[in-house]
Length: 479
Image (tube, rainbow, N blue to C red):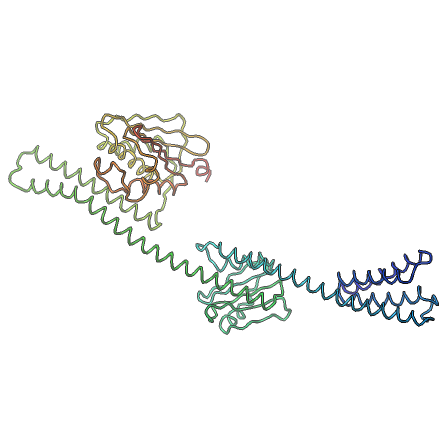
């Protein structure tokens, strides 16, 4: 239908040329021939050979009938006009053929450029694919997006899974996908609108693609298959490398955790062993001595309990198994209970508490938040002189609440601030000031991140250290 319309328009153009030229008095037939020839060339360059041939034949007829004597008849009186007429017709046909060939080459060049641009866009998208999500689904979605397909289905033979994308569904094509993946054969639907092609790696089919909405050339299909195969294999290699890296990190983590915990367990266990041995010996007979040793045992057992708790929390965080049991909690309650649990550690230390009025409730795991506060208070006791007060404050603003714990310790150099939240890292002064595993701040950071907040440190050498906990309030309360 479209081509018929073009033929009609081409004939109309020749008729228009004829009408215009007849209005010009005493126009030269040669000039008329050039007008016709120009029109035929324009039609050939824009539409094709069929339209230009029809236009050339119509122009030859009009040229003979209206402009070569005798006029208004198809008879030609002078022999030279016959030569001119056939020269015009031959020139028009040859020029049409050459122009149509140039147009076809131009269209092919444009098509190749578009193919290259689409392949480049697809290859870039495949390189940027997030391997943490299903890769097959992402590749199918990118195929549908880049080529504007009605449907794209990727069948992963190794996993036995199909991934669909696009506005239409191709569930019925599943047997074709399996056949193409097994036999490595390319199939086309009856309407030529659906193409099923395998993709291979190392000569072995590893899956297949079903594409609906475009007719692809064999070269483009081959390039698509290669890109998809490379993307799938790259994802598998990255996944295997990630598993190997994770396994290695888990082993390193277990080793470091065991070393740290074993080292820290020695001190309380040694004290407990010494106290129990003394009680069991016949030398300790006075009740006050036995109470003192029993107190040492109780204190060191509490220390062991804290170490075990830290190790368990860190192991759960490392394995991604930390689960939050959220409930509405008042900030003042969290602070007061944390201080109460730390009474033994804080004994003799001045603690200044400053809470802003009308603090909102937080939707948090109260036990874990108290654990974070206990870590920071314990850290303050360890790394500040006994005469220095510990300041604890809380305020709210915007969508977050902030709890600050300040200690009057020696402060931190700028380069050390990011490192104090690393697992097992201990500050430069830790070795000579206090014992510890280096797990506390790492646990605190992960707990705060799990709540959608964070923990920051502000310090300068000789000016103390302040830890700031931020917890979102508005979004959590509205849930």
